[in-house]
Amino acid sequence: MIKAVIFDMDGLLINSEPYWRQVEIEMLQRFGIHATEELAKDTYGLRTDEVIRYWYDYQPWPDPDHEQLKADLYTRIRELIDGADILMDGAIEAIRLVRDAGLLSAIASSSPRMMIDRFISLYRLDESFDLIHSSEEEAFGKPHPAVYLSVAAKLGVAATSCLAIEDSLNGVIAAKAARMKAIVVPDPLYFDDQRYVIADGKLRSLKELSLAMIQSL
Image (cartoon, rainbow, N blue to C red; front, side, top):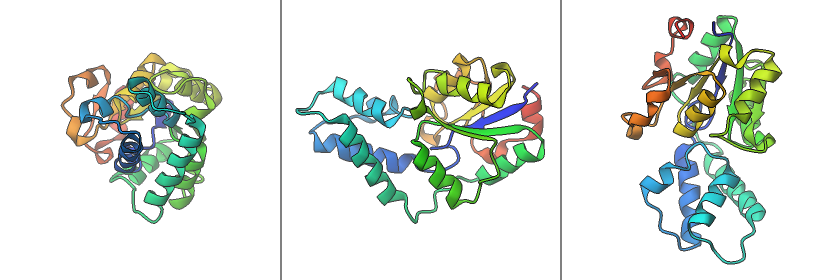
């Protein structure tokens, strides 16, 4: 029986992925790297430091300062999303559905904590979640299950009694590796990706989420 629902944030609750992609492309152009959409797809759901490492391993650039580059990327993403209405359709309704059902609720995101807090504050969701956790606080980010295992432990719930709701393949892999149930709400461009077969459910929008669906898992 599901006792806790754990939400990803970017691409699921907020439509920030286009901005992250823009920042990623700008970074690659800065270092003269040509990335295809197929290659970039593999970075969805990763932490920023892991995105940087992914591209550096693909094509190293001179004098790398990954920490400074990460700080620059955070500054740029804040510039892009400040003032933008990035809330995803059905996000607030899904959060309320979980709370009204008396289930525990959490966020497990690859974004830095300051970005998560910004989202919580902007949409006044301070009392909507029992726990907020960033994979930056873990040794490994998604697709490693660490962030999900930590959330389950802090909530005091067995991982097998948790449902993770994700938008990326890396996130789904992380949730399933933690032995959780997983529902994926993919980017429409990748909705038919056969790799999502590992999820326990697939939705086109959070508006499709129902209590009956959660209880059936």
